[in-house]
Amino acid sequence: MLSIAGLSKSFEDLDVLDGFSLDVKRNGFTVLIGPSGCGKSTLFDVLTGIVPKDAGRIDWRGKELPNLSSAAAYMQQKDLLLPWLTLMDNALLPEKIAGRENEKVHTRALKLFDRLGLQGFEGYRPHQVSGGMRQRCALVRTLMFEHELVLLDEPLSALDAITRTSLQALLLMLQKDFNKTLLMITHDVEEALLLADELLILSRAPMRIMQRIVLNHPKPRRISDPQLMEYKEKILSHLQEDMRDGSY
Amino acid sequence: MTVHTRIIPAVTVFFLLAAWETACRILNVPDFIVPTPTHIVSTGISQAPLLLVHAGTTAGEILLGITLALMIAVPLSVLMFAHPSVEKALAPFLVASQAIPVFALAPLLVVWLGYGIASKVLMAAIIIFFPITVSMLEGFKNCGREYVMLFRLMGAGFWKTMRLLYWPWALPHFFSGLKVGVTVATIGAVIGEWVGAQKGLGYLMIQANARLKVDLVFAAIAWLTIMGLCLWGFVGYLERKVITWK
Image (cartoon, rainbow over the protein chains, first blue to last red):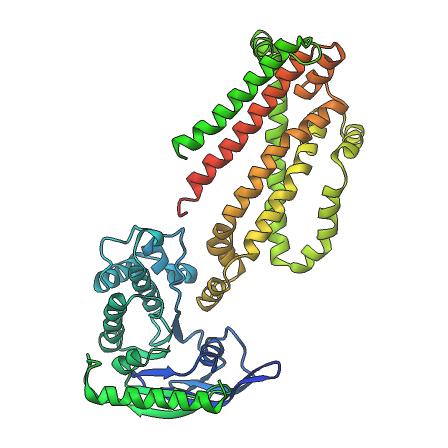
C-alpha cells in the first residue's frame, strides 16, 4: 500500500500542499480529481522526486522512501517519445538506460506490443503513427519499468474520444492482468467514474481531500449507469461549490 | 524541394548574368575593370589547371579548419552545458573572439604560425567554431524539461542523458550552426591567404589583381562561391541523412 502523510510543498508564498495525506490500496485504481491549479501535478512531481518535498512522509509497502522514483512508473499527458527512436527503442529506453537491454527484455517488450495492439509497428518512428498508438507505446515503456505502482498524470487528456475509450480499457487491463496499483490524475469526471475504485475529490490549493467516493461497480462500466450519473452530478456540484468559495 | 524552388534560383542567376553581360557589352566596359561573365567562364576554363591547384589548397585549408573547429566546438559546448560555471567563465572570450575583426588577427597568425597552411586553417577554424558552439549549446539548453525529467526518473546520469537525449535533440541546432560556419569558412581561409601565402585562391586573387587580370580574380571568386555552395549543400545532405525524424 502507498501511504502519504503530512506532505507539504510551498512555492515562495504559495502553499500548494500543506500536510496532505493519502492512502492508496494495493492493486487498486485511485483517481484524483480537482480544479486546475489545485496542486495535483505538484503532488506527482513531489512523489516522483522531480520537486523536493518540504515535509511529510512517503511509505510504499511499509517502507519509508524519500520519493517514489525507484518504486513507481510515471506516465504523463504527453507521450514523451523520442522522435529519433523507433517505437520499440522508445519502449526499451528504461532498460537501455539501466544497461539491461537483452533478448529477454526484447521478448517482453514484443509481448507488450502484441498485447497493446502495436504488433507490426515496432520499427516505426513516433511521427509515423497516430496519437493513440504513441500513447500506447508510452504505456509499454511505462510497463517496462516493472514497477507495481503506476502514476498517471492525465495520460488520456490529449486524445480523441474513440482512442481515449480504447486506452481506458487498456488501463483497466493494467490493473487486472498486470496487477498494477494505479494512481491517476484527471480532469474528466466521466473518465474517473469509469476507471476508479476509489475517487478522491480535491479542493483548490492548498490541496486537501474534500470527499472520498468508493466505487464498487463492476468494470467495464457504462457512463449511462444511473448511479454513476448521480455521482457525476454530485462531484461536479462539489467542484463548483469549491470554486465559488474560492471566488473563481 | 519542389521543381519551382529549384528553378527560381537558377532563373534568377541566369537573368542577373545576362543583365551583367549585356550591360558590359553595351557600355563597352574594359575587361580589366569588369569582365563579362562569358569572359570569366572562358578564363575559368582556360586557366582551370592553375585554378584547380590553388582551389585544392584553399579547400584543404577550409576542410581542416572545419575539422579543427568541430574538434574544439563540440567538446566545448558539452563542457559549457555540463558546467554552467565554465560557460560563464568562457562567454566573454567567446564573444571577444568574434568581436575582434578577423582581418586584425590574420597578420598576427601569419607571424606566429608562418606562411604555411596552419595560419589559414586556424583563421577558418576561428570563424567557424563560434556558430557551432553557440548553436549546440542552445540545442542542449532547449531540450524539453519533461524529457529531462523522464530521463531522471529512469535513473539516467548526465552522460547517458547526453548520449540518448541532449545530443540527438541538439543535432538540428548543430547542423544550423555548421551551415553558417561552412559558408563563412572561405572568408577565414582567403583572408589568411591575402595576408601571407604561397598558394591558394586568395593568394592567386592578390597576384592576379596586381597584374590587372580581373577576369582571373573573378574566376577565383566563382570557384570560392562554388566551394561554399558545395559545402553548404553537403552539410544539408548530411543533415537530411542524419535527421530522418523531421
